[in-house]
Amino acid sequence: MPFLDAALTNLLTPMILAFALGVAAGLVRSDLSIPEAIGKAMAIYLMFAIGLKGGVAVNEQGIDSRLVLALAAGGVISFLLPFVAVALIRLLSPATDIATRAAVAAHYGSISVVTFLTAAEFLRLSGVAFEGFMVAVVAIMETPAIVAGLWIARRGGANPSLADSGALFREVFLNGSVVLLVGTFIIGWIVGPAGASEVKAFFDTPFKGVLTLFLLDMGLLAAARVRGVGGISVGLVVFGLVMPALNAVLGGLAGYAIGLSAGGAFLLAVLAASASYIAVPAAMRLALPQANPGVYITLSLAITFPFNVIVGIPLYLAGVQALY
Amino acid sequence: MRQRYVKKRLEIIVENALVRRVLSLLQSEGARGYTVLPASSGAGDAGAWQRDDITPALGRTAILVVADEDQALRLAEAAYDLLADHATMILLSDVEVFRNDQY
Image (cartoon, rainbow over all chains, first blue to last red; front, side, top):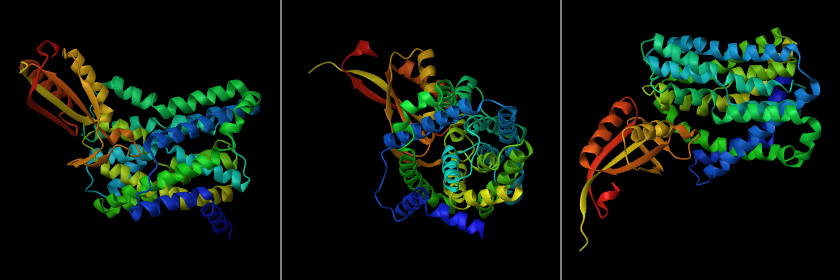
């Protein structure tokens, strides 16, 4: 079966095995850890490299209407998914308070850059082409979900704290990953393949190795959150597994409808399926402090992230390829 | 023995996401100085947290101010108003300092 082959191919990459090693080391409480500063440096490296690569691809391929459509689709999907999420949480875990429900919903509308990177590597491994501008869609999808989540909270009576909207604006629109992705995308666009070749030895060849090491760190961080799973309801755990698959269907269909290639539609499906664990928690701590971070971080990092990188990625690609 | 002066020590332990807000508050309320200290890990009503977590927003930072009693109480009240909804600790204690005119 193609899906099982793809799943096995995905599972047996150094990246996913490194993630599994991190999870295993964390679960047995090994003292293995990646220093915080190195983790941050790797994250900056990965985002710089992927942004640059995306910009160079647009420089080579030029801009067409699909770029605008993909950006618009990404923004709309990110804004609308929290409404789907909040309805699903109400169904699966009615006891969850409105603030936590809205915060979780915002996480699932937003995205995980590492899930995207892992999916893009999986495409390269599978020999499936995709549009370089999908990196710009990553940046677009970070933030509309935060606005939707706060709106849901306000409508539900959990008044978000918007006293210092300047700080929230910075967190939402100028957070490090958005600035880095957009900035490096523009750099790649300006310099094109000739300029990028000057830094290729640093940003291209070691990329997979750094991603592998980064996934080891992600495994350790996810395992540290696994203990929190016992503290959340079964309904929410089910939500953490069902929501990404449902979002992937919506993202994949949207990609297909706007005329993306199978690779591009798959990446839009992955972005829709992924949940934030960096940008959105920061915004929620600022604006919705009454929401329980133990719930939203655990769901996003300990349930949905592993589900997506291990099972979701090959599953979504099989689904999208069946569509094409 | 060198002369010592009694002051108030105000410690505000706050989520990293809110540090900038607290520092602007201290400045607007006229604090003469402050010291920002990173916190390593901890646990409380809002759950456990650690400095090297996936998102820096969940970590905590300690902000230390030494001031005259009136000033310290005013700063503490203002900080409480700002942070009432957030996971935070606001501590006031008596301390002695050597340099009276510095605080």
